[in-house]
Length: 189
Image (cartoon, rainbow, N blue to C red; front, top):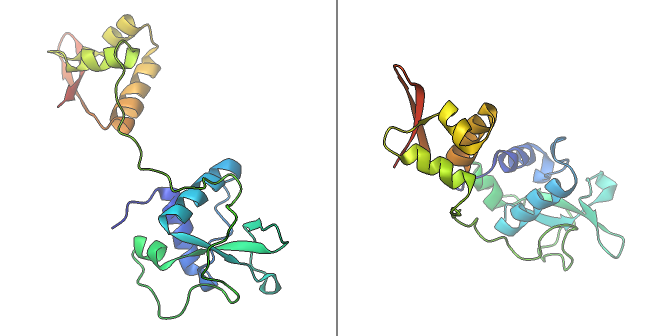
């Protein structure tokens, strides 16, 4: 099954429940450039498609084309399958929809599909590299030792452990309480 972000799953789930699988309105928390980026990615992956909006039916408009017509967003069979919904026999596109893609890209959306995210490479000589080196060393490091070595605040160290190392770099950081030393953090390879 395709890996979706929480926001993408939310948009597709809402679209699956709406008539004709219209993806609009987007979640309240998604505005401006962030909305354009998420929608652009979903269009590039084929989860959504732009179709002519039927304003007589009150269909929401994602953007206006140069000729005064509006376009709305509709979840595709690929998008619905990504959230585990089997495609229906009926056409999910609203009346008046065209199968031809729009010649004009949505505002603030990339014109070409986005490439897969690059694998993160570590730069040598950075504080993050020093932190990783300390955690991989024999015996690991405590928060106090890292604070002293990197001239960081304790909350910055905890944030780097949880955010940069665990979430962004995907490293496995473990901790163990050692008598006389306190909680010691290490990276398991």
